Image (cartoon, one colour):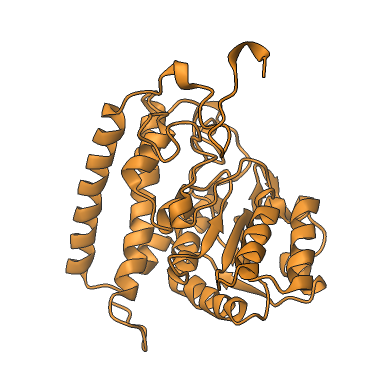
Length: 330
């Protein structure tokens, strides 16, 4: 067991529990895709669990996150109910968003989860807007924008960084750099560096080991403290590796863009095992058992839940409760 000094009791167990929960949730979800219970597939977060776990462990309950098409880990780390999340993936009415959001649009406003987003980089302005609005209302909310390396040259994300730096908006820009934008290597698609983007806007920008939840937590704590004190945004580049496919479609298409040597090296530092090394074996076993029982219940809950009634397809389109008329009229 590796012991880290000066940590409150339970921090390491909490980090391990989160990375293990995300790992097993994703593995269960992939099984449900293969069984036809989750239609359309998912973007597995397997291998990147330490980023979500470390960042969200640094946040207060009222803080806000926005996510990406690969967002299950972020949503779970911020505290979403695994059963309702799995029901959402399966398109059931008991899901977080009544089965209407699915894998790439899961949200829970009550937990500060302002939604995953299927559009690359598009959550940047949502995050900045949410943090700015909270600050204008007198709250000390910090907001986190998770995005991948494929988003760092998207104009809307760079515009968001500019505004956040200019107005000192309390935001963490967290880049999960797994080396690939779908199948395109980062080195083939980006000029300059990721941290250089932050430096260009005058914000602190750091690179951390994204396979180590504690290393991510340390960086996130510093950035959260800075943001909450009114000093503005920080960019954190988390070097990580995606163990599974970009999308489960690859399981049948057999796309080949990474050689076995690279994959083996990438898997050699597993976030789950790194976090487990800081616990007593007995505590790890206890947490593993709890998570398996939790996910057994989650799968049973999701599969027993009804699909939404097609008659309600036009419900919940407007925050005011107004219902769109069928037949094209208004």
